[in-house]
Length: 307
Image (cartoon, rainbow, N blue to C red; front, side, top):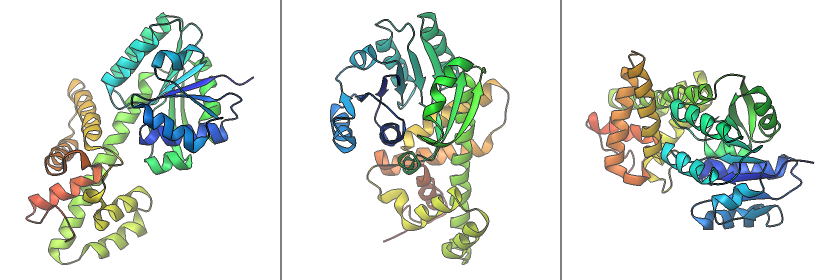
Protein backbone atom coordinates (compact mmCIF):
# COMPACT_ATOMS: atom_id res chain seq x y z
CA UNK A 1 0.00 0.00 0.00
CA UNK A 2 1.38 3.40 -0.99
CA UNK A 3 1.98 5.94 1.79
CA UNK A 4 -0.36 8.84 2.44
CA UNK A 5 1.19 12.07 1.13
CA UNK A 6 0.56 15.66 2.17
CA UNK A 7 1.84 18.89 0.61
CA UNK A 8 2.39 22.22 2.39
CA UNK A 9 2.91 25.35 0.27
CA UNK A 10 1.48 25.90 -3.20
CA UNK A 11 3.64 28.51 -4.88
CA UNK A 12 4.62 28.38 -8.55
CA UNK A 13 6.90 25.39 -8.01
CA UNK A 14 4.71 23.50 -5.58
CA UNK A 15 1.66 23.48 -7.80
CA UNK A 16 3.50 21.81 -10.67
CA UNK A 17 5.17 19.30 -8.36
CA UNK A 18 1.81 18.34 -6.87
CA UNK A 19 0.26 17.79 -10.29
CA UNK A 20 3.03 15.38 -11.19
CA UNK A 21 2.81 13.57 -7.88
CA UNK A 22 -0.86 12.90 -8.53
CA UNK A 23 -0.48 12.05 -12.22
CA UNK A 24 2.71 9.97 -12.06
CA UNK A 25 3.28 9.07 -8.42
CA UNK A 26 1.11 5.93 -8.24
CA UNK A 27 -0.83 7.30 -5.26
CA UNK A 28 -3.69 5.18 -4.01
CA UNK A 29 -4.99 7.89 -1.65
CA UNK A 30 -5.84 11.55 -2.33
CA UNK A 31 -2.97 14.01 -1.97
CA UNK A 32 -3.64 16.30 1.01
CA UNK A 33 -3.14 19.98 0.15
CA UNK A 34 -2.51 22.88 2.49
CA UNK A 35 -1.69 26.48 1.64
CA UNK A 36 -1.94 29.56 3.85
CA UNK A 37 -4.22 31.10 1.21
CA UNK A 38 -6.82 28.35 0.90
CA UNK A 39 -8.00 29.49 -2.53
CA UNK A 40 -4.77 28.19 -4.04
CA UNK A 41 -5.50 24.75 -2.61
CA UNK A 42 -9.08 24.86 -3.86
CA UNK A 43 -8.02 26.00 -7.34
CA UNK A 44 -5.37 23.29 -7.63
CA UNK A 45 -7.75 20.62 -6.39
CA UNK A 46 -10.27 21.68 -9.04
CA UNK A 47 -7.58 21.40 -11.72
CA UNK A 48 -6.20 18.03 -10.62
CA UNK A 49 -9.48 16.50 -9.52
CA UNK A 50 -11.28 16.74 -6.19
CA UNK A 51 -11.36 12.95 -6.04
CA UNK A 52 -7.54 12.88 -6.20
CA UNK A 53 -6.92 15.59 -3.63
CA UNK A 54 -8.07 16.60 -0.17
CA UNK A 55 -7.96 20.27 0.84
CA UNK A 56 -7.41 21.08 4.53
CA UNK A 57 -7.35 24.35 6.43
CA UNK A 58 -4.48 23.81 8.86
CA UNK A 59 -1.02 22.29 8.81
CA UNK A 60 -2.04 20.07 11.70
CA UNK A 61 -4.84 18.58 9.59
CA UNK A 62 -2.42 18.01 6.71
CA UNK A 63 0.05 16.14 8.90
CA UNK A 64 -2.40 14.14 11.02
CA UNK A 65 -2.90 11.16 8.70
CA UNK A 66 0.14 11.64 6.46
CA UNK A 67 3.10 9.29 6.24
CA UNK A 68 5.19 11.67 4.12
CA UNK A 69 4.82 15.46 4.36
CA UNK A 70 6.37 17.60 1.60
CA UNK A 71 7.00 21.31 2.15
CA UNK A 72 7.87 23.91 -0.48
CA UNK A 73 7.90 27.36 1.11
CA UNK A 74 9.43 30.74 0.34
CA UNK A 75 12.00 31.33 3.05
CA UNK A 76 13.54 30.16 6.31
CA UNK A 77 10.95 31.88 8.52
CA UNK A 78 8.06 30.25 6.67
CA UNK A 79 9.70 26.82 6.92
CA UNK A 80 10.39 27.20 10.64
CA UNK A 81 6.82 28.35 11.25
CA UNK A 82 5.47 25.32 9.39
CA UNK A 83 7.71 22.93 11.34
CA UNK A 84 6.54 24.51 14.60
CA UNK A 85 2.99 23.58 13.60
CA UNK A 86 4.01 20.10 12.46
CA UNK A 87 5.70 19.38 15.81
CA UNK A 88 2.59 20.31 17.77
CA UNK A 89 1.51 16.71 17.22
CA UNK A 90 3.06 13.26 17.24
CA UNK A 91 5.44 12.84 14.29
CA UNK A 92 6.83 9.47 15.30
CA UNK A 93 7.42 7.51 12.08
CA UNK A 94 6.43 10.39 9.80
CA UNK A 95 8.82 11.65 7.13
CA UNK A 96 9.11 15.39 6.50
CA UNK A 97 10.61 16.37 3.12
CA UNK A 98 11.62 20.01 2.69
CA UNK A 99 11.84 21.20 -0.93
CA UNK A 100 12.41 24.82 0.09
CA UNK A 101 15.56 26.83 -0.59
CA UNK A 102 16.86 27.75 2.86
CA UNK A 103 20.21 28.27 4.57
CA UNK A 104 22.03 24.95 5.18
CA UNK A 105 22.18 25.79 8.89
CA UNK A 106 18.38 26.00 8.88
CA UNK A 107 18.16 22.61 7.20
CA UNK A 108 20.48 20.93 9.69
CA UNK A 109 18.57 22.47 12.61
CA UNK A 110 15.26 21.24 11.18
CA UNK A 111 16.63 17.73 10.86
CA UNK A 112 17.66 17.72 14.54
CA UNK A 113 14.30 19.07 15.69
CA UNK A 114 12.25 16.56 13.72
CA UNK A 115 14.36 13.48 14.38
CA UNK A 116 14.52 14.29 18.11
CA UNK A 117 10.72 13.87 18.13
CA UNK A 118 10.87 10.46 16.41
CA UNK A 119 10.28 11.70 12.87
CA UNK A 120 12.44 11.44 9.76
CA UNK A 121 13.75 14.25 7.60
CA UNK A 122 15.03 14.64 4.05
CA UNK A 123 16.12 17.88 2.40
CA UNK A 124 15.02 17.89 -1.26
CA UNK A 125 15.52 21.30 -2.90
CA UNK A 126 15.03 21.35 -6.65
CA UNK A 127 16.63 23.10 -9.61
CA UNK A 128 14.40 24.41 -12.38
CA UNK A 129 11.84 27.04 -13.29
CA UNK A 130 8.06 26.69 -12.74
CA UNK A 131 7.65 25.48 -16.33
CA UNK A 132 10.05 22.64 -15.52
CA UNK A 133 8.03 21.82 -12.41
CA UNK A 134 4.92 21.62 -14.60
CA UNK A 135 6.72 19.36 -17.06
CA UNK A 136 8.18 17.11 -14.37
CA UNK A 137 11.71 17.94 -15.50
CA UNK A 138 13.21 19.35 -12.31
CA UNK A 139 16.55 18.20 -10.90
CA UNK A 140 15.91 16.96 -7.35
CA UNK A 141 18.65 16.96 -4.71
CA UNK A 142 18.06 14.55 -1.82
CA UNK A 143 20.10 14.38 1.39
CA UNK A 144 19.52 12.66 4.72
CA UNK A 145 19.79 9.16 6.12
CA UNK A 146 19.87 6.51 3.42
CA UNK A 147 16.69 4.80 4.64
CA UNK A 148 14.77 8.09 4.60
CA UNK A 149 16.02 9.13 1.17
CA UNK A 150 14.96 5.73 -0.21
CA UNK A 151 11.36 6.59 0.73
CA UNK A 152 11.54 9.80 -1.32
CA UNK A 153 13.27 8.52 -4.47
CA UNK A 154 10.09 6.92 -5.94
CA UNK A 155 8.70 10.46 -6.30
CA UNK A 156 11.74 12.17 -7.86
CA UNK A 157 13.07 10.91 -11.22
CA UNK A 158 10.22 10.14 -13.58
CA UNK A 159 7.63 11.83 -11.36
CA UNK A 160 8.57 15.34 -10.21
CA UNK A 161 11.95 15.43 -11.90
CA UNK A 162 14.13 14.25 -14.76
CA UNK A 163 17.21 13.64 -12.61
CA UNK A 164 18.06 13.03 -8.96
CA UNK A 165 21.25 14.05 -7.23
CA UNK A 166 21.42 11.51 -4.43
CA UNK A 167 23.30 12.55 -1.30
CA UNK A 168 22.11 9.60 0.76
CA UNK A 169 23.87 9.31 4.14
CA UNK A 170 25.20 12.86 3.85
CA UNK A 171 24.09 15.68 6.18
CA UNK A 172 20.76 17.04 5.01
CA UNK A 173 22.28 20.51 4.84
CA UNK A 174 24.47 19.40 1.94
CA UNK A 175 21.39 19.45 -0.30
CA UNK A 176 20.58 23.08 0.50
CA UNK A 177 24.28 23.96 0.40
CA UNK A 178 24.35 22.75 -3.21
CA UNK A 179 21.09 24.57 -3.92
CA UNK A 180 22.35 27.89 -2.56
CA UNK A 181 25.67 27.64 -4.41
CA UNK A 182 23.90 26.41 -7.56
CA UNK A 183 21.57 29.41 -7.49
CA UNK A 184 24.58 31.73 -7.60
CA UNK A 185 25.25 30.28 -11.07
CA UNK A 186 21.75 31.36 -12.13
CA UNK A 187 22.19 34.84 -10.65
CA UNK A 188 25.59 35.30 -12.24
CA UNK A 189 24.31 33.93 -15.57
CA UNK A 190 21.67 36.66 -15.64
CA UNK A 191 24.29 39.26 -14.75
CA UNK A 192 26.58 38.13 -17.59
CA UNK A 193 23.70 38.03 -20.07
CA UNK A 194 22.54 41.49 -19.03
CA UNK A 195 25.98 43.01 -19.41
CA UNK A 196 26.45 41.26 -22.76
CA UNK A 197 23.15 42.46 -24.19
CA UNK A 198 23.78 46.04 -23.08
CA UNK A 199 27.30 46.00 -24.52
CA UNK A 200 25.98 44.54 -27.80
CA UNK A 201 23.30 47.23 -28.01
CA UNK A 202 25.58 50.15 -27.26
CA UNK A 203 28.39 49.01 -29.57
CA UNK A 204 26.01 48.53 -32.50
CA UNK A 205 26.25 44.73 -32.70
CA UNK A 206 22.66 44.45 -31.53
CA UNK A 207 20.90 42.07 -29.17
CA UNK A 208 19.59 39.88 -31.98
CA UNK A 209 23.11 39.14 -33.23
CA UNK A 210 24.30 38.39 -29.71
CA UNK A 211 21.33 36.09 -29.15
CA UNK A 212 22.27 34.05 -32.23
CA UNK A 213 25.66 33.45 -30.63
CA UNK A 214 24.05 32.50 -27.30
CA UNK A 215 21.70 30.02 -28.93
CA UNK A 216 24.58 28.44 -30.84
CA UNK A 217 27.02 28.07 -27.95
CA UNK A 218 24.83 28.13 -24.84
CA UNK A 219 21.43 26.55 -25.59
CA UNK A 220 19.16 25.88 -22.64
CA UNK A 221 18.94 28.27 -19.68
CA UNK A 222 21.22 30.92 -21.21
CA UNK A 223 19.12 31.10 -24.37
CA UNK A 224 15.86 31.03 -22.38
CA UNK A 225 16.86 33.95 -20.16
CA UNK A 226 18.25 35.81 -23.18
CA UNK A 227 14.87 35.43 -24.89
CA UNK A 228 13.06 36.79 -21.84
CA UNK A 229 15.31 39.83 -21.79
CA UNK A 230 14.90 40.57 -25.50
CA UNK A 231 11.12 40.14 -25.32
CA UNK A 232 10.77 42.57 -22.40
CA UNK A 233 9.41 39.79 -20.20
CA UNK A 234 11.81 40.89 -17.45
CA UNK A 235 9.56 43.88 -16.63
CA UNK A 236 6.19 43.05 -18.24
CA UNK A 237 5.30 39.91 -16.28
CA UNK A 238 2.68 40.53 -13.57
CA UNK A 239 3.66 37.46 -11.51
CA UNK A 240 7.43 36.84 -11.55
CA UNK A 241 8.71 33.33 -12.10
CA UNK A 242 11.48 33.85 -9.53
CA UNK A 243 10.51 36.76 -7.29
CA UNK A 244 13.26 39.29 -6.72
CA UNK A 245 12.89 38.97 -2.93
CA UNK A 246 13.48 35.22 -3.11
CA UNK A 247 16.46 35.75 -5.39
CA UNK A 248 17.94 38.22 -2.91
CA UNK A 249 17.26 35.80 -0.05
CA UNK A 250 19.29 33.16 -1.88
CA UNK A 251 22.03 35.71 -2.54
CA UNK A 252 22.13 36.63 1.15
CA UNK A 253 22.53 32.98 2.10
CA UNK A 254 25.38 32.57 -0.38
CA UNK A 255 27.06 35.80 0.74
CA UNK A 256 26.79 34.67 4.37
CA UNK A 257 28.40 31.33 3.52
CA UNK A 258 31.15 33.12 1.62
CA UNK A 259 31.87 35.49 4.51
CA UNK A 260 31.94 32.69 7.09
CA UNK A 261 34.32 30.64 4.95
CA UNK A 262 36.60 33.40 3.74
CA UNK A 263 35.53 33.28 0.08
CA UNK A 264 35.60 36.11 -2.46
CA UNK A 265 32.38 36.35 -4.52
CA UNK A 266 32.47 39.77 -6.25
CA UNK A 267 30.26 38.69 -9.17
CA UNK A 268 27.52 37.68 -6.76
CA UNK A 269 27.79 41.02 -4.93
CA UNK A 270 27.28 42.87 -8.23
CA UNK A 271 24.29 40.71 -9.16
CA UNK A 272 22.70 41.30 -5.75
CA UNK A 273 23.20 45.06 -6.11
CA UNK A 274 21.41 44.95 -9.46
CA UNK A 275 18.58 42.88 -7.97
CA UNK A 276 18.14 45.60 -5.35
CA UNK A 277 17.84 48.22 -8.13
CA UNK A 278 15.34 46.03 -9.98
CA UNK A 279 13.26 45.81 -6.81
CA UNK A 280 13.32 49.61 -6.48
CA UNK A 281 12.10 50.00 -10.07
CA UNK A 282 9.57 47.16 -10.35
CA UNK A 283 8.53 46.36 -6.79
CA UNK A 284 6.88 42.95 -6.53
CA UNK A 285 7.07 42.46 -10.31
CA UNK A 286 10.85 42.12 -10.08
CA UNK A 287 12.33 38.84 -11.33
CA UNK A 288 15.85 37.45 -11.72
CA UNK A 289 16.22 38.62 -15.36
CA UNK A 290 15.16 42.10 -14.20
CA UNK A 291 18.88 42.50 -13.53
CA UNK A 292 18.94 43.45 -17.23
CA UNK A 293 16.94 46.60 -16.57
CA UNK A 294 19.30 47.67 -13.78
CA UNK A 295 22.36 47.16 -16.00
CA UNK A 296 20.64 49.14 -18.77
CA UNK A 297 20.01 52.03 -16.41
CA UNK A 298 23.62 52.08 -15.19
CA UNK A 299 24.70 52.23 -18.85
CA UNK A 300 22.53 55.24 -19.74
CA UNK A 301 19.61 53.29 -21.26
CA UNK A 302 16.00 53.08 -20.14
CA UNK A 303 15.17 50.22 -17.76
CA UNK A 304 12.58 48.99 -20.26
CA UNK A 305 13.92 47.84 -23.63
CA UNK A 306 10.62 48.37 -25.50
CA UNK A 307 8.36 51.37 -25.98
